[in-house]
Amino acid sequence: MSFANWYNRTLNKIWGFVEDRTSMRKWALRPQPEFTFKPSYWTGAFVVNAFLYQVVSGMLLLLYYQPSTNTTLTACGQPIGTQSVAPAAWCSTYYIVHSVPMGELLLTSHLYGAYAMIFLMFVHFYRGYYVGVYKAPREFSWMVGTLLLIVTLGMGFTGYLLPYTQISYNATNVGLVLALRLPTFGPLLGPLILADGTSQGLLSRMFDAHVLLLPLALGALLYAHIALFESHGIAPQATSDPLQRRRFTEKEDKQSVPFMPHIFWYITKWGLLYVGLLLGIAALWPWTLPTYVGNLAAAGVVTEPDWYFLWLFKFVDFVGVTPVLAIGITTVLIVYVLFLPFLDRSKRTHPRDRPLFIWLATSLLGFFILMTVWGGETPGVQIPLVQVAYTLGPVFAVNLLVTGLFYWRYRRNYLRRLAEKEASIGGIYPVPSVAVGPQPAVGVKGVE
Ligand code: HEM
Image (cartoon, rainbow, N blue to C red):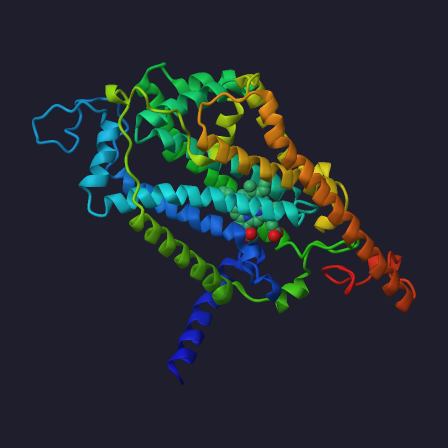
């Protein structure tokens, strides 16, 4: 027996034993159809990979980080006996970057890893939106996903203050002014976030949220998210067929590719590529620590959040947009995403059948990208409303035109192909027997 054969047989034996004794096939790590072996079907798994890297690198950072505003706690890399002028939180970050072996790589990769996780999460979100994965029976998966999105952004927000730099301190204060304006939740959140109203109180609460409360919430939500995913199975391809089945049967599952070793190695391969790329980029472009809170020379530091909140910061720069209005509109957006499965009621999942929702998604994507670039180019610069209309109006108008044209063109073609197909086999759509008898998993062949 060759080594490869022996290796595969042993692995299968061990995995078979684990699967049998845990009844795993009933509750987790389902087999998946062959056609899902494309990165687009595994965007959520990429976010999980990114999250795992954050947990590991975050735990290593915890070994050195001190969540304190006290200036006498540490010498901040200066000779022993010298009094530091910088807060311990900043000093310990400085120490990680300059004195801990590989510390700079560790901290930079944790920071870039957060960017990557947020970016991948938006890719996962938009992919799901466009192919209509939120439709029945996956409404709750979508809603739990929306909560994951909020908690992940919360992780970014709370982590930003921890190095205790002047720029992060300023931006956190602006963010807090906005968050505390949230209807109902704002006044409740106030005492929780601000603690006793001192800088130390705020830093401690941000630290607790970043390393304990939010990761626990994220872990619990992720568990629910994946459990729901396992119970429904992966969503079939988007289709215009309203009679499509949205789940694979147990029989189909048995013909699918098993989790072990195929899916496991598939995801591990992407995970290793991710870590390699992240470390490579972090090594090539290490992060530089900005100056600390309270440095008098930093009086002119601009107030700028990380890139994923730039759009919101730019929004409050618009003349007439008050924090209450900005946070009100953000709340409406969140509610829209949360309840999207109940707003888009049509049974068809293909983008060509959902022009209004596709227009909204694409316009919002354009809006976020433009606002992010704008926020990065001109942070804190007030923008008159006429300029806002000139800049943002075309995003919505051009998208309306493009989506409308696509809808018109594809819908016409689709209806023509459907009519041809119907004529050739004497009527297939909609036929009651298709609804009750065995159906194709992803719509009627040839008219998907
Ligand atoms: C921390 C953030 C998130 C993580 C770690 C995560 C993870 C996952 C994983 C592992 C899957 C299984 C399939 C796959 O790999 O794509 C999945 C599926 C899914 N996720 Fe997420 N997700 C996150 C955020 C979101 C968000 C923001 C939404 C939408 C609001 C969402 C909606 C969904 C839905 C509807 C499915 C089922 C898709 C299907 O069956 O093809 N997720 N997610």
